[in-house]
Length: 427
Image 1 (cartoon, one colour):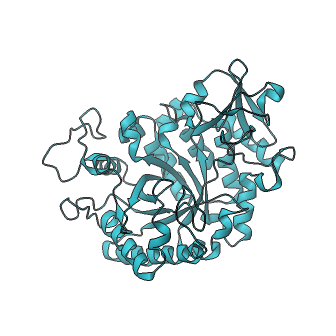
Image 2 (cartoon, rainbow, N blue to C red; image 1 turned 30 degrees about the vertical axis):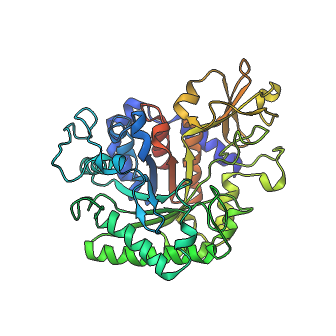
């Protein structure tokens, strides 16, 4: 399997179309993916507009024409256990100038909707087959899930608020239905049931409560879909950690309830540890010096999910568009599996910046991973590049998985090098 995968991936990576070739027929890529039942999902972050990355960039870098779905991150959850905007200015109030807008027309003070939501609406008008999904929670906004999911009444109130706002388009403070037709579904990112995540409340009841919450979402989405003549997507973002976090999930029930699961196969290792390693390696390395309960790879994660009742076509893998980096790394083995003094100041920076940073890129055929080592600054970077993204896409095809999601789209190059590699490899 390893030899077949790496050989096929290397050939396919070499055969990937050039940027000019890809841009000559980009719409066919997304259409072909959808026709094959594959998903290529890109997360667009609410806050990226503050650093100048806007929905219009998804047109210029080709992502909008190559992806099947954009997940908007995130909706927050209020103290009352309801869906709410975490930044209403970015979501639906900020006016976009003509140069910023997808359609090239400036927002006005009299229109019903502005901000990112309106830009997503404009994006969808240009790419009508592109699905837009609201992702709810995330690392920073998962602190209310345990409480709201603990009762049937709490679950129903939460689900009703999310469906009403994002599927029926009734945003508080705006005209009724102002956002209707923008979102094609909901993505639930509870980090994590029966695990603290970002210091969140948790308990053993979360395991069954998460299943019940997702079942409540499925029922409500189906009802809304019947009323609106739509099939609304329902997905959940779940942990790749088969040793702890994934064990807290009732996977067969979740697989049955959702359209698919977005397995967050990222952050296996990073600068918070005292030894360099790969953050999202496809294959395991027998020489990995980590303890037995800290050895990770994508194929191990997939094997765990499949062996615990999740069909292959209900699994989508997450690919990082960012790097993790360590400082104070010696030059032995070009920094791989070496002690470090801590995280580099550039830890968790975008792929585009990491790729441009000083250093030499090395490829590891054992794990199908790349790393960069800069001897002058003693910095070690782990990330994905177009070759490893293409290899992951080919693995997805070979394994019969549903597709991939990427975090996050603002990390790609201005020409969309990573998304181009992903879409081409999934065909």
